[in-house]
Amino acid sequence: MMSPEADFLPDVQLQHQMPTCVFGLTQEQLWPVVEQLAGESVAHFSLTLQDQVQGFPGWAGQKLVPTITYETIGGRSGQSRLFVKKLSPGLSEELHYRYLHEQDFPVARLYGAVRGAQGEEILFLEYLERTFNAIDPAYASLRTLFLQQLACFHNLELTPTYRSQLPVENLTSHLTAERITATIQRIADYACQGRPQNKLMHLAKEAQRQLPELLNLAQEVAGQIEKMEIGLTNGEFGLGACASSGSTFTDWRLFDLHSIGLRPRFFDLVHLFGSPEQLTTVYGPSWRGQPRLGYYYLEQLSAGGGPSYTLSDLFDQCESLWLAYAFKLDWWIELAQTGAVIWTTDRKAGRRHCRRQLTLLFEALLTRCGSRA
Image (cartoon, rainbow, N blue to C red; front, side):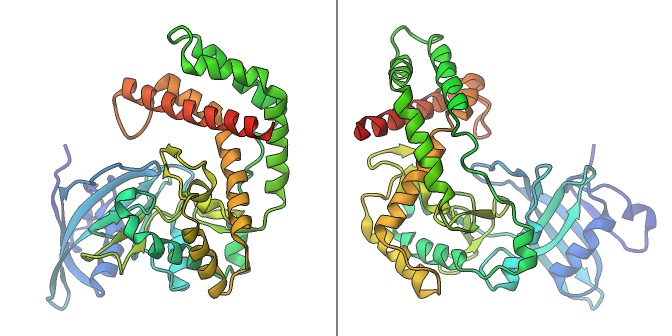
């Protein structure tokens, strides 16, 4: 069994090749990271894993918080905690950290990136003490700061090289008559497995009755999205992954970048200004009833050199984007059946949670169809 602590001596070749407690990386692989952390050549260092990642671990990969103790060639000693993130296969953040740092956008400091045994990206980032999510009601006082920085992010200049490396997400591929019809039938079949005359079964029957209206709505939404201006987006429904190294969030940093890409400009605001009022989903409550926040974001966007939009533009585009999201019901069916969610090992709780989200979204879609009649 691997020891949680090891002392690294540069003159011991064999020890250089020994796996460490940080995702099995060798001492040799870690040496440049430690020297970047120290700011000069290192004589030796040690690692311990004393801290655990707190809260929801996220979707993108595994995380560790090692403490590194080092001594430089010049005799200076130091100790620091790092946040180490091993991304899931196919995901990457190094490119974004380096580019945003060059643009002076506040991101967690990157000390190095190493490839794991399967080629996965492993990032070594500064450890930030406090995290917050602006869509959480507990952080309502930070919403203007959040919107200000989000507008700044959306106004970042994209070099041709960086832009060419950004993925372009297709947000309308699921809005076809065939897929929507099959999804509604799948919901009906799934609902039959529950209690007789349960709410989801009632909604499925209503959806089959309103199928022509649902298909027309999907076609209309797809057409609206295809006309939207494309821009840089964080992709995590806003800058929800923010953290600070101090006691306040005035020196916050963004640290979750794997979903950055090119999408309709207001994509990051979809769950804030696009979801129906009074609806609270996994992404928090809607801000649609707080137009002052919408005005504030648009003012910040324009003041930073971005295009000018009306509040109606913002709300209408966000609503269309939210409806496109709501039509992805087959994803929630899958989770409602398996309960295989990352935030709990309790499959029963996972199934219950996802069935509730499926019901909320399905009901919201049908309500929207009814309002068009």
